[in-house]
Image 1: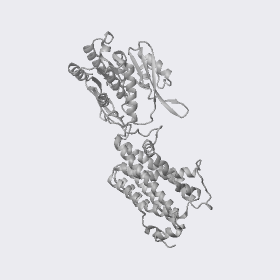
Image 2: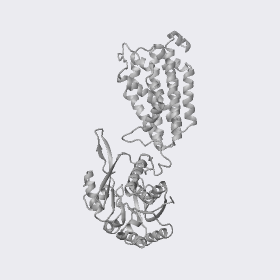
Image 3: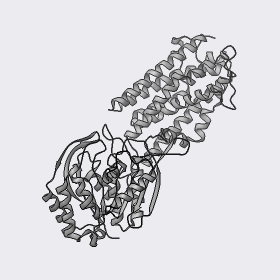
Length: 536
């Protein structure tokens, strides 16, 4: 198939998330050649539209003539048209090129009309006196019109909020088709509907055939994310690209709906407000979706799934299980406390390195919170050791074991040589795993033997610390930082695999760390104390 061309007639978005910029990205992503006619210039960003200035109708017409005289267009998409004079200039140019709309001109133009009236932030993008011209002059040219729910209500003169169901959408689409448009694709993104008993919501998009009166609908999962700037422009441009490639209207709108849904799921934060969708998700996809209502921790979930058996062996290890049951040897617990004290010092250094590796103050602050929590955790270890006659000075003087050295050096090596994501991932198994173990053992999960009596189980206090509100809050903070770091730094599939392997390696070193405690439990307390250089 030869290269197809799509002409977009719309306003310019200085933030590049909507308008001409979004259209051209979408057209390119669909492997078509995009040309453009600018109707207005906007000063806008992810926070909203600050100013709009129109291009003269004569210049709009000149642009259309220039493009069509040389390059032509296999399909045309219109967006923000600024005013009545501009709309009429566009219609005159269409008539000049294709003849009358009702005499075959519409079929030849393949025009997709995105009836841009008001921006998402509430800024008026089309004067009220231009709406009549849009309805009377331009709608008959549209092969497909793609309003959202508020736009559809506005175009047919219904009160705001009149559409509350799919049946309402169907009636509104039929009335809009009666104004001369061939197909109405009424988008349901502004009207998420409940689905099932789990609180899930879906978006229902409706396609209405203006000739036969037939209706079809499609459901897609509702993604509760803020990066939806430019979705209307993007969808209309995707529909136009499909028509240019010879697709039927039904296939073009269905494929466009899938494209936009994937672009929302694959978006990443840009600016301080509603960011754009990821127009090139099919060319340079996010390896994971952004956190959303249905999957709040996609990165963490992926890492744990990737670790598989190693993660299961870690969080179900016999050492913490024996602490919960009260059957652990004191020697094992002492060895763990002493070596974990040393590990936590290096763990704090790794998180300090994470703070060093970011310019984002929020992410930096998150790392400092973790460091402070680690310092609190080390003090907890000191107090436990003191109950067994080991002073702070003696604890600090105990040398690191070979197992501990292997783990701490790996964490520091990855944190120092890698980037912020490396530092986050290599420290994640310790933070998240201890939280998982603590929550599981405190809740007395099925199959777990727990002795919560302090008189018979001197170790249960340790379990309670990690299963309690303080440490579980630390885990939540760490997971949020992990997710935010990936959200702000989307990575390739290869890079994601590399990060997952780091996570697995750190998990295996955690297993070895607890294995060493179990081995230490096979020694007498005298042997342990003597080995560590402590008085027996």
